[in-house]
Length: 262
Ligand SMILES: [Zn+2]
Image 1 (cartoon, helix red, strand yellow):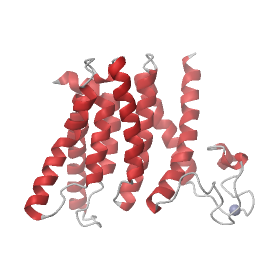
Image 2: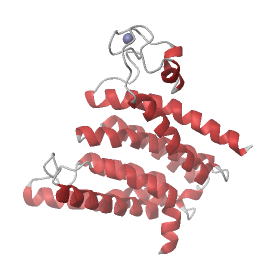
Image 3: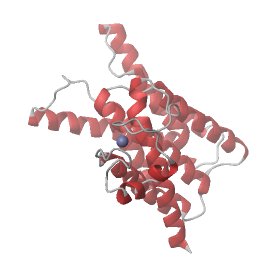
Image 4: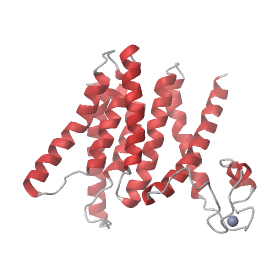
């Protein structure tokens, strides 16, 4: 029985991954993710359902457009498989023991964070539409938890995710405000701070703090290693949103165990 669930989750990941491709391409340019419908970038032909089956269309068409035979980038099927592979451990962690709301919430947030990861890495910005999409889920979870406590927050208190929003984002907000007051420079982008606030609503205050600490540790390691390798092309402007994305995924999988250590 269980193996069918995993196949289902994998397929779900492929489909969502195919949509994330569209988001990653269009969102940084400020374009709509629904209009116009997908088309071949070379010949402009509008793609049909047959051309858009995640992964399998690419395999059957051998990586070429069905109409003009132009090569299709391998990054599209890779993104679909990556999303599916990222979903599986989340299902193992949450869905396996019947925490379906936690699983879908985690998968939803992680999907948004996959887009954040790639867009922030390349463009050094976090589109507001992603923060707002995340916020919608955050509010829904807070409302649900008010009536029926969710396991993920750990203590059954209705205010836990609200405290999570404050705890996850508060530190960076204070640092940023002080730094702006002192030197008129933002220490962290407000996109990062808003993103952390949204994440706090999904994971609660304890894991929210873990996300914050893990993001800072990962960025410190990244900054040090790029300094050592002298490969910093962006002059100290780090893709902090990408590090928040990695930290959140790690926290979803191991946050409970990390809390037990303290
Ligand atoms: Zn074409």
